Length: 195
Image 1: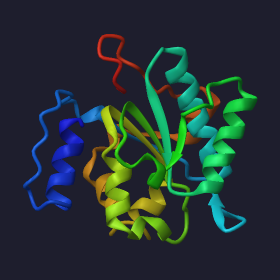
Image 2 (image 1 turned 90 degrees about the vertical axis):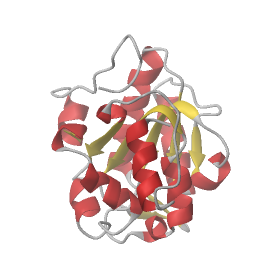
Image 3 (image 1 turned 120 degrees about the horizontal axis):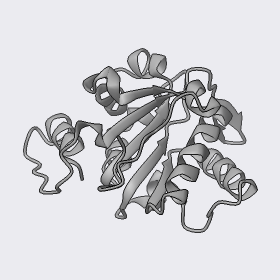
Image 4 (image 1 turned 135 degrees about the horizontal axis):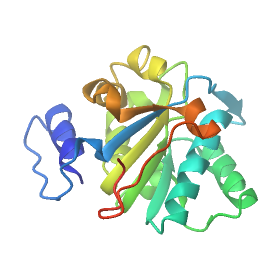
């Protein structure tokens, strides 16, 4: 995993004992997209955040059109199913692309897109072991889609919240601006890592 993510996980989960030997050292290997108008809604016994799903699918379209190897992880099955249906509507790859955290444990990919879903209570994010699994699946880069206000507020004590506060403002882009095409998630053609 990239050094910036491995170092964070080592400090916050393994008391500094985890060592990462993977080469991506850029601080931009971990990016956040602020989906500040996304709201969690109940989807059966699970949760959905439709605005966040739209952002995830736009990132997936960018990655797929660039030939990047990626997967999407979300804590909630309803969100996984919703993202899969949006990918299908957009004509993007669906097979073996979207997973809940438990089904992706032990796997990894070059680039990971994470849909946090929650915008009010931390829910799943309170489980550090499962959140650790979610955050440690990328080889080169990770994009986390969530509300900045939520991660800096109610979820600030969770592992994802601590990661969000540990990165600089340059590691964040506005989700609405991204969806409207006014802000881009740039890709470095030499390393295919997120810029």
